[in-house]
Length: 606
Image (cartoon, rainbow, N blue to C red; front, top):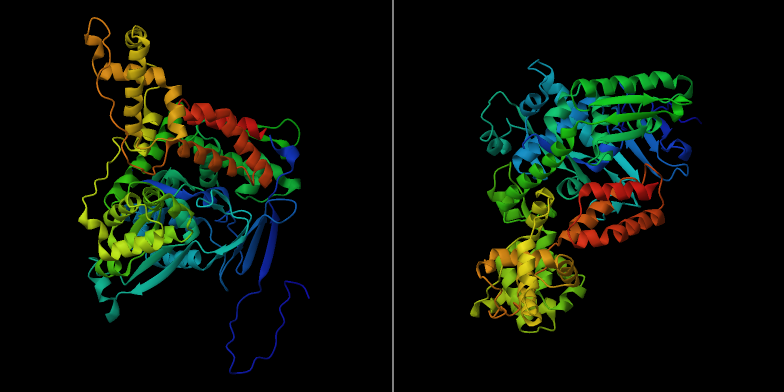
């Protein structure tokens, strides 16, 4: 029997019958032949939504039509989009509403779960106050919450720092419709000043998407710009090329890749018509000043044609500014909840939820906090698989400060049975008998990384300072160098091989800066350094080093090409390894830019 055939049977009166149209499954191949391969408005878009056809561009979608997108010849890399019975898959309106939700989530403080009204969404979308807007928005939210996505070898995970191999079945969000007229919802009624509003929507972003948005699996866009783009095709192209170009001002991209990744209708006999659709989208982007220019290059067939895109000189700076403004905003949000980094997960606490308003319903514990506590504990703690979860629960119950104090107390007392001692020490306040002081590094590594990326790269002339150092005796040089090294380690907050390598690579600059900072040039002749070398602080803090920022950046950006070039797991590892080997010295010495990393990645992909 054909998939499109529907068998009608007599149904007993006690069975419920849902009269819906027939189900149709459409399969599309999305792999590309190798021969064709040549502020508040700032929102985070999950990388999967940016690079995959999560929202259909088809204006003639059918009810009960399931779409399956294949990305390789073996047909083991795909995404299936399945609507609820009697509905059709999300399209342009759902895409706009999702962007608006991301903007509202940012304004709320990035909670996983938040409330929203149709009026707020209407205002973000600028769709006017016609009588039907509420129904349109409600139906779109229902469609977003009821459509199921199956990812096989396609979903990027920021937690795993790569694509999940297992098949993942998920929705984008879940939806709860709260009717304000009901007595049990009176607490929500008080929060809504506009009495004309009859319903509010509780949005809960699904775990996979939220994890990427919060951590490193996202791209930053201006929501105002996205919503102002007139067509869904142009919007998708803009988001995709912003990701693929990195910081470059020039991008060549295969027409067929764009057609299949947007996706647009692909028919070899009529591909010229589809190219016209691409051309119209690029004209819109150019008219809106989002690109400087573009050229469609056809040397043989349309299948082998390319689109050459040129970006404004200022767009590189604007893209970096979006990223850093968003990161700074996010840090401010987290600072208000005692969190200091962008990598974290949301943990709901019943007591907090009960006391909070409907808008704020989460308390945050970060992976950095857990790692930091582990670093303070005896080394045996890091070998126990249950410790991260135990630490997380302890922070929620006792607070970070107390947990931190107990961790230091344990290391000081050379504890053997780590987990049991940790729990007992918290319960019985064993560490409160002693004053435990934790030295905070003078400069947070993440802030240092950001300063490094933003600073003027023009090297300073330390000629006079280095002349001063050269004039010292061997003994004086050794003493001064040791003093500079200890000052450097104290600033880093930890002493590892990486710090030693970095110091040796930048030794002359650090010595010169120390001489300048301490006004040693005021003397007519170099004087021996007789100040006592400070003793190494007995502090073991686990911080995220600058090197992690760059290695994560390399890993994430190489992974983005997995499906574009149908790369194997072995080839991905090889590219990452080769890139790290080539750039290792520059990363350690902090003498590198993101643009250099991007150039090396592109070179390794060829």
